[in-house]
Image (cartoon, rainbow, N blue to C red):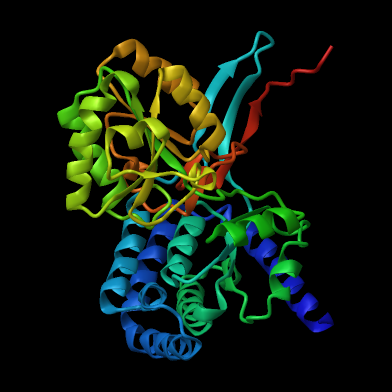
Length: 419
């Protein structure tokens, strides 16, 4: 245990030293490194897939589900996607060094804010080894060092990917310790990592609610997190129902197992009797199961009465809760009680109601007449994202390059002194 503690601390110290060297890197140097990483992954494709095969074989022996094995596999398609992601990050504007709000004070001082890297990011995640490359790419472009702790099921894949990325960094004259993977599966490594508050500036956990809660409760380092995605759509009395149906179906059925899938549907009482039967017919085509309130069950016989524990559940399958609400106020109260500050939608043509919803509903993304599935970094124009935060300090929503930086004050003077 003593050796493991020392090893993890040494990694954190080396990450801190590497982060200092990244601050002065030019955009051109970072972009060149990212493109070289894409080439390196392509050249070492056979090696990466050979190491990935070890994880897949071990996963089969452990009895991992076919869905888990699919997420674990580094197929040619996944590797091509990682290479594309690296190129996309290289093409994004570099936020580091950007100066905002330069203002001249009455005493002549010029005061502004400059975007700077956060420093060292610690990331704890499960399953998908492609996250290793996506996270490393974003952190490098934003000038941060990163220490990655993937799931034990992907240990060979993550080590292989890290070795390729580090080899590229060395070839580009950049500190290889800017990208490190904790090379052991011992769970105590996570606890040790979460105690390195002197060297790691931010922890980003990505995975199931259990993992994220454990990290948030254990860490001495600030944590950016979202526990779950309980996303709602409120169908207003002034909604365009022809528009509403495909938006609702897409929100639930396109990919039901993700955090921005629809889990709760609120229908205004004035349209419920007309609209719910129509919607139920469409849901049948997509095998969507409705668990509803007493009023909804009376309107549509196919709706199963919801249990108390169903409200606010992240189903991650083709089930969702349906509630008939008296008005927008009841919708607000329901969202406040059961929402997870992830994504909330209003379907309405009423300008006043739309503006109230946008202003008063608290979520990382609040949208009008659009699918919940759009709360995604790529869809919102951020490029590759490192995750979605439902905390508010310092990021809220999908985290792209800008969210991996902070701002410091810069001041230009001409000899001014304070009186």
